[in-house]
Image (cartoon, rainbow, N blue to C red; front, top):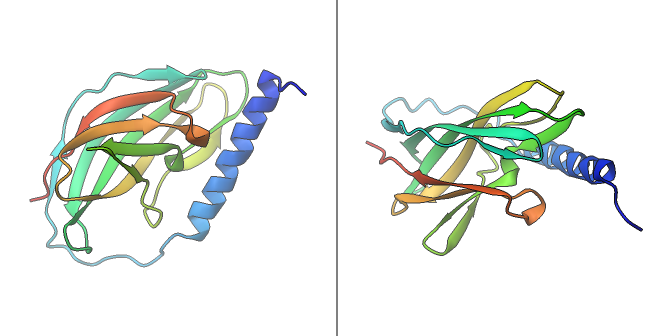
Length: 160
C-alpha cells in the first residue's frame, strides 16, 4: 500500500499530537523560586530553513544553571510559519542537539512548545535541553520521526 502525501502529513500530525500529549502529561507544574540563577544569552542570527512547507527560524539561545550538578538548562526560541495548504504540527520533541558524538533529547519537564497550526499561521515557542556544562557548541537537528530534515550549528552560551 502506497502512502499519499496527505496520508503522510496525517501520520506526522498524529505523531506530533501524541508526543505533545505525552510531553504535557509528563510536565512539571511546580515553579522554581530560585532567583539567584544567572543567565547569558547568545544573540546569533540563524538561517531560516524550509521543511515540508514550514519556515523554521531559530532565535535566542539562553543558558541557566540547572539544579542538576554539572548541567545547564538551555532554552532555544523558535518560530515557524505554515506555508502549506493544510494544518501541520511541530513540537519541541522533534528537535535534538548533537555534540561531541552524543545526542541530547529535549528536556521533558520543560515548558516546551508544540501544536498544530493552520495555513499561513505562525507558531512560536521554546525548546528546553538539559546539557552537560562541557557542551559549548553543537548542532540543533530537526528530526521528526527520527528522520533528520534540517540542522543548524549553534553556540551554547555559558551560564554566569
